[in-house]
View 1 (cartoon, rainbow, N blue to C red):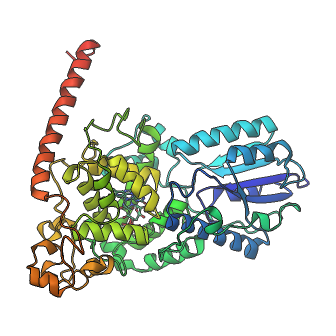
View 2: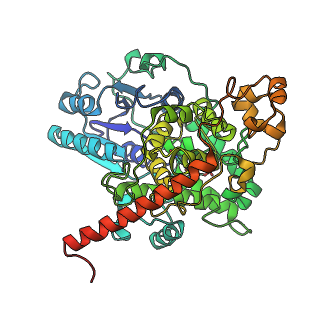
View 3: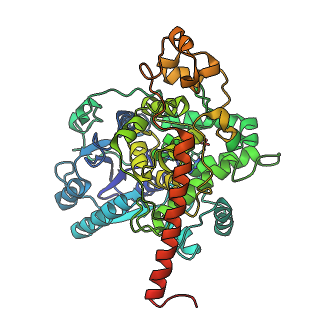
Length: 514
Ligand code: FAD
């Protein structure tokens, strides 16, 4: 049959050419023209997204555009505005981008609530315009809806449970290469107006500080380099990786690439399997395969637990009466709590947009049940703005867990000590405090003996180090031992109150299991 019409490939996450089911489908759809589109949605902008994370997205778009040009003599068309409006217009007449409305639009499924709502609206608009819609699963190992259906509609809440479900689902689909050929761009789809903008144009005043560079090319290079480190992969045990390692970190730092879909999770999965097959290797939950099963589980939770991103109305979040204190929150966010390990980690978050998993544990516990007694939702929002790998499902699952309020939380009374030498589970292996000196320059000259607890240094030592605690670097904003004890009591009380309220409710509704 003669090629006809235009197929639009709507990129959102999945910012890659390889193992991209939607792109492959559009390539063989019989369309005469193919138009790769990304819509810069104002919802994702300076108010909610920091410069590191936004620039990483722009890197991804630049890379995608360059690859489309090089491999297929095509390009990426960047549109700006609410997708409902921008694509709605396209479905009516094709204008101003196309001579006529497209025949087909394809995209990768996204199971976050914002995306589900947006995509349902777009689908409706497409139908109204007589435009076909095809969607594909590609961001997770399994199709989230199929995996949930297999598990009777609910998500596992343990890594063991996730392993069993994965077994029942069988091996994920094998990754596929990029299309060999793409139909040409529609003639009208050209011009500088559709180029990838820079950060300034998008309303950002500050520049990105991170060394992390976005895009499929950078992601593929990192993944290939990691998969070559066969001993690292076979012996990987997450709790044994050092939270203080930053140059380079002790884990893969593939998270930003997985988040934006610059690398394919299925390609990573099969790469890991290949390295491990036929040799001794670590096992889930501690192994790298275990880590990506945590990722999978987060998506299943996010897609099936109502109000997953808040305490109110979330059946998996116990009601804890967190306090409200903007001053404490700001001290935590800017790395001025007076606890150097917490502060270095938070400043690494601002500067690099990435933090080791155990450092995330430490700062999240400190903000919530451990020390500051502030809501996990506030910490989650800070992470969401500053992490380059910020991911709605992963971030919420982990914050819920660390707050102590979720069924998958560690016991709420197991609190991290903000001075790492008091807590070996943080796995800080940095007796000289290189990590602290890098991210908290005020403490650069503090002798190693005091680097994690500078308030204990004698005045002469502080003077000699050019850092007077209370003047050049804050005193601890709370006394850990005192607040921690009080918080545990508060937590216990809140749990007891929730239990008795639950009992009363059951009695009132006559549904007690008597
Ligand atoms: P590796 O150890 O190399 O793991 C490989 C991949 O497995 C990761 O890239 C990630 O996709 C997945 N993974 C690893 N740990 C977890 C986990 N605990 N839960 C789910 N998936 C995991 N990760 C994010 O990608 N985005 C977030 O917004 C995010 N927020 C977090 C918030 C808190 C409070 C905590 C405690 C953890 C959070 N994590 C988040 C999970 C984890 O810390 C990061 O995925 C990991 O540190 C990223 O580094 P890596 O790629 O080197 O990890």
